[in-house]
Amino acid sequence: MANSKNIIPVFFAADENYLPYLSVTLLSLSEYAEEENLYDVHILSLGISDESLNLTRKAVKPNVKISVHSMEEKIAPIREYLKVRLRDYYSESIYYRLFIPSMFPDLKKAVYLDCDIVLCDDVAKLYNLCNLDSDLLCAVTDESVVIQPVFRKYVERHIGVGDPAEYFNSGVLVMNLEGFRRERVEEKFTYLIKKYNFNTVAPDQDYLNFLCRGRVRYLPEGWNKQAIVGRDMAEESLHLVHFNMFNKPWHYENVPYEDKFWHFARKTPFYAQLVRGLSGYPEERRLEDMRRGEKLIRTAEEIYLAEDDGIAEALRYEYFNEISFA
Image (cartoon, rainbow, N blue to C red; front, side, top):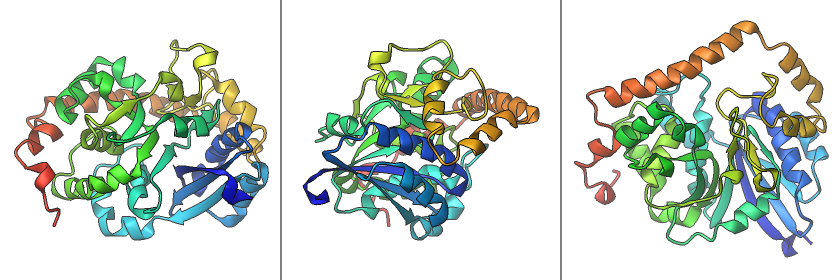
């Protein structure tokens, strides 16, 4: 029967520690999953126990299939390069999405989602919304960049995205996997990380914006609505909420759209753990989050004011599309 269904491939990157939050995302995906589709969920990871994952498997609908894929073979040869620029709350898992095209050569297109997301609509609509041809991916403009002058200058000067409104958030992507393979995006990324390893604010996102510039189809904001105070949108336009940066409803109260998170959190096997995490989030961590947010802005400014003219300028002197990547 599954073979007669429309298959919707959806990818995540997570470890054991992030599974409670991913479970909320998966419960929201399952809530809106239509019977005629098979939701083929792939978790890219360096370790999630079957015991923990089976709790979530039991909570989702039968047509939501969940499998885990080890990233060790892909990451091990370049781990030393990936770790150089990681800071704050980032881990090497942010890069996993770049390896989906080569790891799944039979797939033509796929959805990638971060784990701090709540769906308010069927993810199959997102998948079917993007009939990719010459574009490499579909994405939503990064709202936090557009409203922050320092970030705007950073993406213009360092990343080479001339219009900040064209700088996308990499937490919600519909990827043209055939296009990524054809354009050798993974090889180009590996070349860049080994030869330059540019200083960045959002490592995977910055590289993807550079590598895919001019080849992006932009989606309505409602498909990646960030939980930013004072920037709510009409409910009928809201398809997906992204609790990125530090606005995590499992750490803070009064986060925009927190009711949507807790609606699904109550249905997960990790609800008690999530509640304890909210009530027990230390004051020193809250202060540290504030400092990290301020540090991100300072770092962006320091990077674009440095003598290094940025990724785009450095590569202007290379015949980038002709590189052999040897």
